[in-house]
Length: 153
Image 1: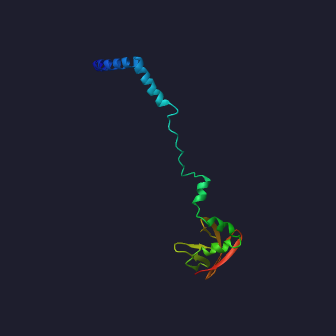
Image 2: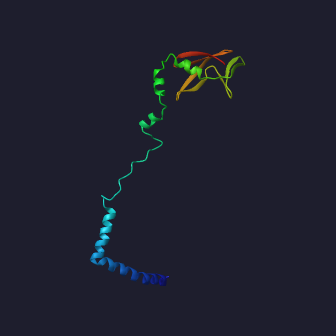
Image 3: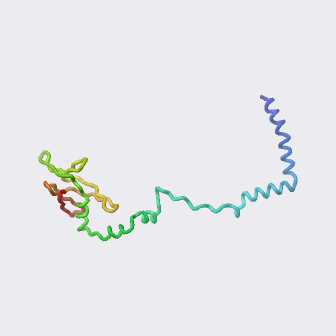
C-alpha cells in the first residue's frame, strides 16, 4: 500500500514542480492572473435572461389574454332576469319519469330529482342551478332566487 503512494508521488513530483516553475516566472504569473480576471470580470458577464414564466401561477395579464375575444362583454351585458332562462336552455334532459311516486329528470347516464343541483357551463363560467319542479314534459330550475321553465325536447 505504501509503495503505491510512493510511486504515485514520485510520478506527480516532476509535474507539480514544472507547474510551480511556470507560475513563478513573472510573465507566466501575469498571464494566469489576467485569465482569471477575465473569468470573473463583471463587464464580460452575460446579461441574465428574463425569468421563465411559471405555468402554475400566470400573471393576471396572461389570464385575460386566454379568454376568447368578445365573450367578456356578453357576460357583462346579461341581466340577472335573463340568466336563468339561458341556463335552462343549456340543460338537455332526454326525458322524465316517475319512480315510486317521485318525478325524475333523465339524462343519458343519470337521473336527477327535485332539489338536486346541476353544474352548467355558460361562456366559460360555471353556474350551479337547482331543479325546482319536474312535469311530464316540463321542468323548472332556480338560480340565484330566480326561476325559469323549459320544455323537455
